[in-house]
Amino acid sequence: MNEDLLPTGLGTVRPAVSSGRPEPPRWSRRGFLSTAAAAGCAAVSLGTAAPAAGSPRSAVRGGGTGGTGNSLFNALDAKIEEGMRAYAIPGAAVGVFLDGQEYVKGYGVTNVDHPVPVDGDTVFRVGSTTKTFTGTTVMRLVERGEVELDAPVRRYLPDFGVADPFASAQVTVRQLLNHSAGWLGDDYQDFGGGDDALARFVASMARLPQLTAPGEVFAYNNAALCVAGRIIEVVTGTTYEAAVRELVIDPLELGHSRFSSDEIVGFNVAASHDVVDGKAVLEPSFWPQPRCLAPTGGLISSARDQLSWARFHLGDGAAPGGTRLLSKQSLERMRSAPGPGGTLVVELDGMGVTWMLRPTAQGRRIVQHGGTWPGQISGFLMVPSSGFALTLLTNSEGGKRLRDELFTDDWAVSRYAGVTNLPATTKALSGQELAPYEGRYMAQRINEEGAVEDTVIELTRQNGQLHGTQTAHDPAGRDEAALEEEDSVQDQATEMKVAFYRRDFALDLDPEGRPVGTRTDFVHGPDGKVLWWRNHGRLHRHQTQ
Image (cartoon, rainbow, N blue to C red; front, top):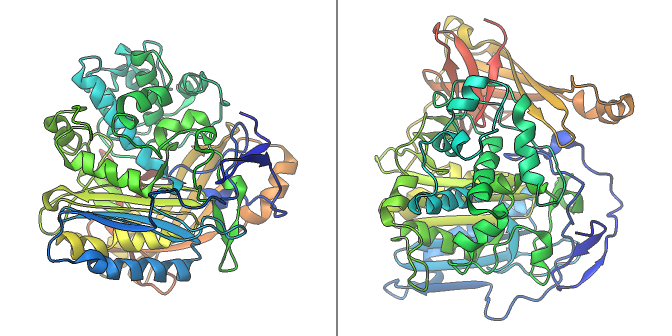
């Protein structure tokens, strides 16, 4: 791939042009997949194509009754349009499946500098929803008898290892897919664009420390999904991307779902945007992603394709042409038998085979994922008991706020599926009740250059809540010039507040002390003391006992 060229929505390729703006600091570019790497990938910039023929900006089809048309979704349209204005989101696309109807619509534009309307076939990065494609591909191999979920990883990767010998030998394929492998999961090294990128990444994992024993604790683990992707490569004898296309994407006729920027030339592409002073700003440097991270978050897709993905998982396992890709039992296995539970923004019964399994007050389960990559924020959920699915793709950092409103809160699931979150009424706790949770917490990640970075959070008791200060440190010794460049960022601590609603579970609060809906929890060690704070699915070790 020629990294000095930018594919555009016109299907032409032209020299990359600098935006004239400095690259945002890496600390501001974290998400579920964290920092975008700058090397080895082309960046998508100007979305200048007209909408594809046969791809209306909105469409309703299927077996709805009563001539409802778009009226079912007027409130959703208004909600999205309001959020786009409030949170500086230039473009979005939504897909809904409800009562046999399929609703797909684009909003806004692909690019603030060269605006082209977004439609249902406009492509975005879907981030971590890619994991469900990895899991589904593994299930195809399971049905073919080539992989067993409860087999050790070393059956397929004999040389596999992390820092802990026991975990290296014992961890299973299922534990990779339900995020209970137990080692440090945020490893974002870049091993280039070659076909060996994933193999090199997995080999490099030998230094990853073990946080918990395999199968015991849920902690979101991007690196584990890369191991699953490497198993796919070894078992199929081809690259991860080629295997997923052959086994899943092509049979399902997902014509706007690809892994490489080279493959989307000619598509209408939603460019990535930062939010600066309340306005969306084009940021081409946000788009690139290391190839070795493809199994954990590399898919580029459209709202229409994502809705087809939902319909497949809500169906009986057949592709559009009638070919059976999976049995209905295998689809149900993917969203049942959860691993260890906890929180990942919402409460979880645990993870199935790459699906977040979210409880509701009504006892019916929400099956969910979504993704975060700089400037590309998406949500995806299904309520199988209601036959309801919702997907949202956005092209701005501001998309986080809108996604939380639609996918974390009750707004969408209560309207369209009749379910709500588990109750969470916060209460002020006494100083004695809060004391076990107070102290310093630390988490680590490995950045794209292979350096270890620490995040430190100090939690203190204030007015019946916990107040926190988060700072980032780089103990791995990058050169002095690099550190000086980031000093202004690292010196800016992030303030946070949490309030408990039941033992060990808390809601995040906004600066005014109001719950924002996202949930977090604390994990006790064998001695009964608080050992971890699980924040956004990551384990932060309690340093002060």
